[in-house]
Image (cartoon, rainbow, N blue to C red; front, side, top):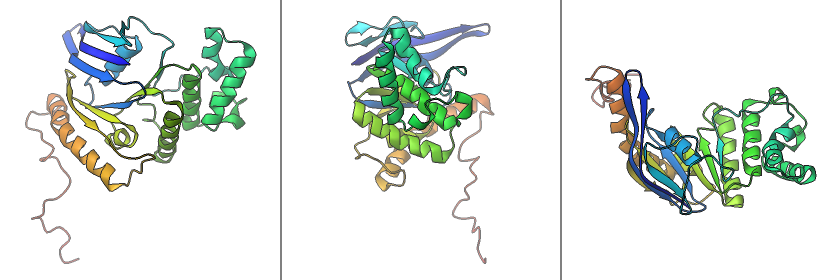
Length: 278
């Protein structure tokens, strides 16, 4: 479905040019759930925006089913960290908005809006306004709105980052159920490796700036997945091992050059005898 070929992205600023992405190659099949992880500033969101058509690569290209992506389109819906709902519209009207712009009739878009609100368990709040909802509920509305457009690809940029752990856990389970039901192609950006392994078919680890693909992990675990599962934890540990070097690169660029995770760890070594005699 998607072919990312030799993508570079450079941002020009007053103090010089910044290479956000460097020679990124990636193929994504129809119906895959792919998660991008990496340290801050590695270009994960930039790559997602290029796929969405919100940014243009400096060089290289992204093709969907053989055709270059040149601009944003309804076949690629984006869900951001903020729900970005219209505060003056009711929940059901927010879900209907994209379909209205698309030209769907009132009856059809109302039926579809109710269908997707039911999928995210918000039918009771169809006539509520966004300010009457919790942050997690607003993200459910944003998800229903994205699903209602019936796009081929759903692009999710850290959509659960601002949520509390309990709400996030529920939405993780529901997103897996929705993905299994709709078979949409999902590309998801996160800093959270536990979240990545919980959701993904494939986890793509990116290097520190400039962002390149360092390694790919295939997550061959059954669904629904449990964060406490030992096999999931083992995969998380492997990915964290790959990320450690990249996180250190970012920290050394921002802090003193002699900074290391080992020197700044709060976990005592085995020779400290901490707690003896208690």
